[in-house]
Amino acid sequence: MRVELKRAVYEENDALAGEINRGLRERGIFTVNVLGSPGAGKTSLITRLAERLAPDALSVIEGDVASDIDTRALRALGIDAFQIETGGDCHLNAPMIKAILGRMRLSDGSWLFIENIGNLICPAEFVIGEDLKIVVASAAEGSDKPYKYPTAFSRSAACVLTKGDLAQAVGFDEGFFMAGLASVAPNAPVFPVNGRTGAGADALALWLREARDALTARSAAADHGRA
Amino acid sequence: MHEASAAEAIVKMTSAEAMARKAGRVSRISLVVGEATGYMRESLEFYVAASAKGTVAEGAALDVRYVKPLLSCPACGIEFERLRFSFDCPACGTQGIMTKAGSEFYIDFIELA
Image (tube, rainbow over all chains, first blue to last red; front, side, top):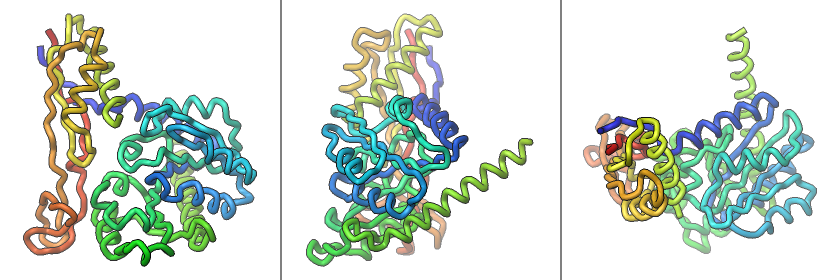
């Protein structure tokens, strides 16, 4: 007997992600899923953003295959960080986020950054409760990343370009990178950020605040519409 | 690893469907996979077979139908398959924009026995 299913393989994950997002939204928590290769500068970027989004409360979920090095580094800076060790899994999924949120005490109206596993493939396939994804790409990785991993870029609302100070040394072709990005993510703004000095991070922090405020305004309008 | 969690979900969904319909087993699973997702046929076959062991989906044949990613040209409006490291329209050379085609990942149908 043939049964037409036409069902997304990750429908269970996606439904749970929707539930997580609604729960966070109701509390005014804005959630950012940070994608990027290993060593792209995701943790440094989150640190620079934490400095700029202060005095708002901010928490971080760190996803790693093994080790809690990043979590300890963030905690040493006074950032509220929690670790998920996937023990080999190459991406975070909604059940992992639901489980760890049960152990975190988030403040209403705060920021939640989820640093995904360093990988441009599988993390792009999963929604985990975020309001938006951002993808971090470093000049050191080369300029072909949007061509090789289009999904990671096309599903991200913004692209952060790090380690620009290495561009010349590693032969990073910015024009080629930008052309690729324009095809796979034509609406995503690009923010060059130096993860060590923080140069460029102000513009990204401002964009995130605007994204959050726009979402809050849309939610309020939707609530008003229902009332 | 990329395919392992997908395989688990596929086995869970198809087994549940077989049980709900009181079928003895799942004999075929047909997937639609956009090439932009990067799911490999050989890996899907391997992990689905491994995940299905001891379930009603054990031994099910797995069909994978790939969908080519398409770009649309903002200038001349055609849709086209990309070449390696180029998103340019083959007709007019304008840079194309990625469409949703190529990002599919769903179970199209199953056969129960």
